[in-house]
Length: 116
Image: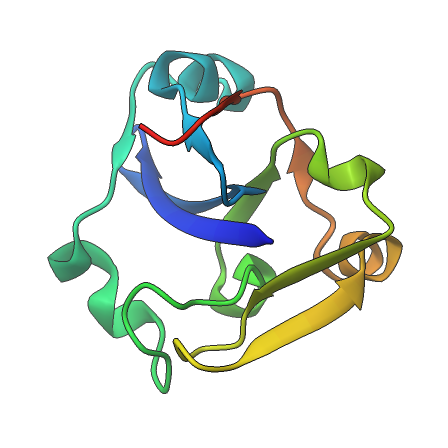
């Protein structure tokens, strides 16, 4: 299961996609993105960016919203990934290679195992 986290990279909104049991190391995220600062975006900052999606259930298709997408290992090694489909009750399962072809995310080492 992949989770989509909305982040700010030097004030610019982006998507970080990582295994649901991992958490973000914001220092590593900033370095991987070439940013001086990375932080969690607030719901107020991104709520209007995803019409038709429940807050916290955005699919990781940042390219559809004009957002950069960063993906953390080990997701690229998975045959398939599953993620929220815009609601808290529906999921999409997709071959990772198809996701990569559609979204063209940047692979970056920014996640740590274990939920914080």
